[in-house]
Amino acid sequence: MSGSEAPRIVGDDASPRDPAGLYRAHAERLARYVHRLTGDTAAAEDVTQEVFTRLLERPPRHTAHLKAWLFTTATNLVRDRARRRARADEVAAREGAGLLSPRAAPDPLRQAEQASVRHRLQEALAALNERERVAVLMREEGFAHREIAEALGTTTGTIGTLLARALANLAQRLPLDREDR
Image (cartoon, rainbow, N blue to C red; front, side, top):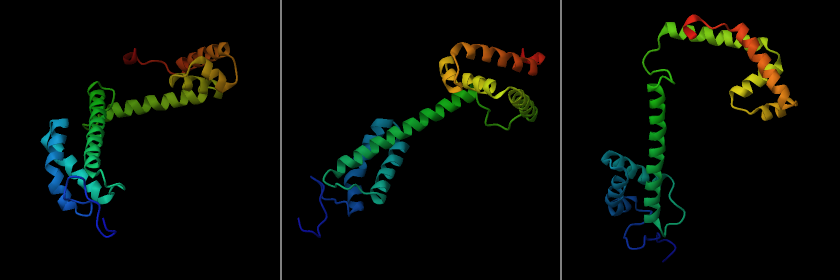
C-alpha cells in the first residue's frame, strides 16, 4: 500500500476517508444489528446515525478493524441508552411513589409548609453544639457509631450518649404537629 493510499477495510471497498462508502457498506447491517439488540426501529436508526457521526468526529486510530469498531461503538451506545432509560425509569418510579416532587406545578401551600419545616429543622440543628450536630448529621448519612466516634475523636459509648442527648434536644425544639403524628 502506498503512503498516499488510505487503509482498506478487510473484505470491503470502503475506507475511513470515504465515509459515504462506509455508510453504504455498513449502515444497513449495523441498523439491523442495533434493531435486534433494542427491538426499536427508531433507536436503531438513531444509534446508526450516531456511530457514523462519531466516526466523522473522532475516527479510530487503527483502521484495520473498522467494521469491528463500528459494531462495538453501536453496542456501547445501546448500553448507554439502556442505562439512561433505567435511570429515567427509576426517577419516574420515585415520582410515582411520591419520593420526588411531581412534574406538575407544585402546590404553593405544600411548598410553604415544607419551607417552614426545613427552616425549623435548620434552627434546631444550629442550636445543637457542634459535636452533637456532626453526630446527628453523620448518623442520618448512615455512618456507624464507630465511624462517628473516629471522626469526632471519641469512643463509641460516648457517641451513643451524645446522639441520645442531641436527639432529645431536637425533639424538644421540633414538636410534631398533629398531622405529622
